[in-house]
Length: 404
Ligand SMILES: *Cc1c(COP(=O)(O)O)cnc(C)c1O
Image (cartoon, rainbow, N blue to C red; front, top):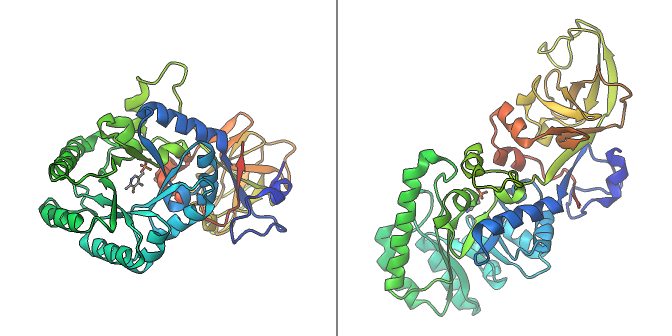
C-alpha cells in the first residue's frame, strides 16, 4: 500500500496540506501507543499528581494538534509548551478545556491575550512579573503564574537573594495573581554523572518551598519533574509532572532505561512504545552498472551491477545529510542501504537483492514493516543526533495521520 491510498485521510489542520495532491512522505502517529505510555507514567507517579503533556517543538515533531487530540482521549487535561504561539495552538485544538502552561517565551505584548484566555505561564524575572500584574489589573483577569526558581540549571529562575523582594511583590498583588505553581527544572536528570548537581537542586528547591510556606505564600501546585526526573528521582514527583519524551515512547537516555530495567515487571520490560512511523514510497527505479558513481560526486561507486530505488525524501525533509552511505530504510520488510549522498529532496537505496519491488512500493524511514524495524534511536546513533533532535527536525509540512 502506498501513500496515494491515504491522501484523503490526513488530519487537515496543516496549512501546508493539499488534500488533492500527494506528498513525498507522511507520518503516522499511534494513538494506542500514546495511551500505553501515559498508563506507564501514571503507574510510576501514582494516582495523585497531574500529568502535564509537554508539547513543545511541535509536540516533539508529532504535531501539536494530533497530540492534543490523542492525549485528551487518554484523559490528559494539562499541556506544557515552550512559547505562546504553541500555547495558542493547544488552546485552539483542545476540546476538553484543558489547562495550558507556557514554560519559556512569552513577549510582554502578548500577555493580555494569554491572560484573557486563562493560559498559565512561568515567571522567572521581575520584568515579566510586573508586566503580567499590570495587564491583569487593567483587564480585571488574574494572571495564572508559575514562579520558577533558580536551583542550579542556570538558565532562568528567580535567585535565592531575590526571595524577599518577590515575597513582598506577591503579597501586595494577590488580587491580580493566581499562584498556580512553584517550579524548577533539572540540569540533566537523565545521567548519573549529574547526580550531585541534581541532588543539590532538589535541596535548593525545598529551601525555596519551605521559605515561602513559612512566609504563608501558598502555591496551588509544586512541580519540578521532567521524564528523566520522574523515572530516576521519584522524590521529584510532587503535585504535577511535566512529561515530554517518555510520552512519545522514548527513554530520555539509554542510561535511564538501564537504571529502571530491574524494577520493570517481567512481562513488561518495554513499557514505552513509539508513536511515530515515517513512510514514503519509491519514486522510480534504475539499473546501474558496476563502476558507475551514484548521485553527486564520487562518494559511492557501484561495486556490482545494481538496481537502485529513488525515494523522494532528503535533508530538506529532515533526513540528515549525515546519513549519506549510512542510512537504512525498509522496503518489502527488508533493511536496505542508502547509497551515495542524501540530497535536498531524495535518496537512492540499494534494492538489487529484493524481488518484485517497484515504483510506488512503500518505504519505511522510521517504524516497522513486516518483521523489520528502523528505530529513531538507531537513526540517531548513526548521526550522533539524540531522539529529541531528530524528532523535532521532522518538518511541519510532512502530513501526519493518527492511526489506532
Ligand atoms: C522540555 C521540558 C520538560 C520535559 O522534558 P522531557 O525530558 O521531554 O520529559 C519539562 N520541563 C521543562 C521546563 C522543559 O523545558
